[in-house]
Length: 252
Image (cartoon, one colour):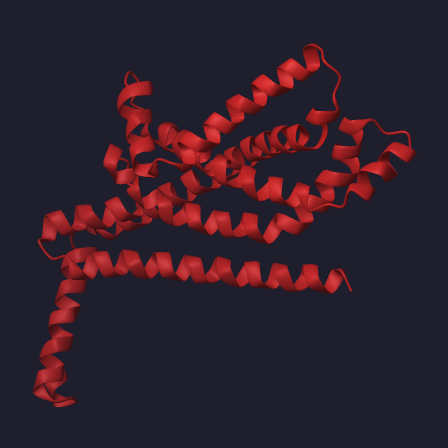
């Protein structure tokens, strides 16, 4: 039964066209698989890039905060020279990564550094992970620097050296303070992975663009991609809000 029996002709025609577009873009030739496959790649890249970013970020944050806290008090020697050199390397890494667009970093990684490799997924994970690490480093560093110096003195009074104090006392407190910010970094990274198509990785955005190129209609696949990103971001934003409330409640 035609829709015009139930609704006005203009509305029935619009719905009929919408259904036809849905069938053309997603049902015909199983084109919905481009969206599902792309979503899988997007989540995979985001997950492993976040893990790499957190690992790099924590190392860089500890180096930077250690330099700020104890370098002026260190005695002249090999350790002070090494700390100074490592800190300069970390500072250069943070400056370059935070000062250049992520899409340019991705293309340099794929077309120059790993030009002989065809593993687009691995290159994407490395590129986004290294990029995320620079921002995680500043997040974690701010968390470490926010811990009162009395905590360091308490660790020393317990017989801990600087490394033990950082591992057992400072870092756990800093991690708790910056956890919501780290969760937000995950959300930002999820959206940044949409540029993976520049190196040919069929992520969610690229999947929608492939459908567009085959059906010659843009609004249905691209709006669907945008809606999927929006739903994912809203979901994780809700989780971050719940996490922040739990952390506030635990401090009372």
